[in-house]
Length: 221
Image (cartoon, rainbow, N blue to C red; front, side):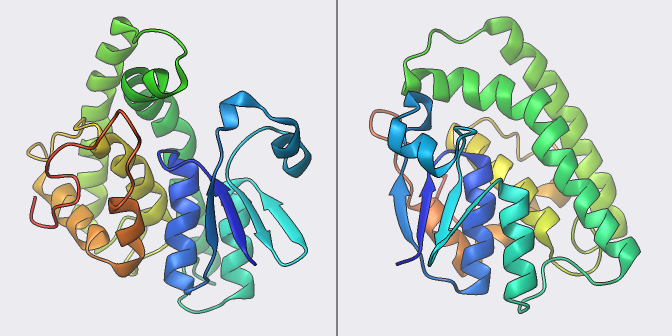
């Protein structure tokens, strides 16, 4: 059986889950407490990170590599364009959200406020949270600027770049950290992503002791 070893509130796992959902690849979700660095988990991925995807006898790690493998082996729907310049833009934006956005926003809000509680790794750092809130405004404005010129973040078709962004925003939205009133274009874009069938399993996620805010699963937010 295909299995995805994941943690529900990992944006990198969510990006892979969205890709699997769009490709209609069925997997068993196996929750992994990756921070405990268990021996069995480290055998699957010595880097000690989620997600890890088992497809038959193949074991795949690193979210971007997994998603690109899935797009190449299951061509429809196409999530990374074949045109070199369009493909570049998708990869550029995936890196933007998985690197810059993750470092400046997700790590300073989602991990400080929620994941530290879940992993019992200390108390939130107020300075980091204030920095994350400030940088979040910049990123939302950048997304709105992109969407003023395009139907989707990377162009006129939905791509992996949209899933990378939505994965991070969905984790932040779980903890009510997104100001949806700041940029209506971003809210409208997220509403389109949120209403897709591939998003349903994300909206059903529940972490014991840390439930999502009231409108998290509401499509009319």
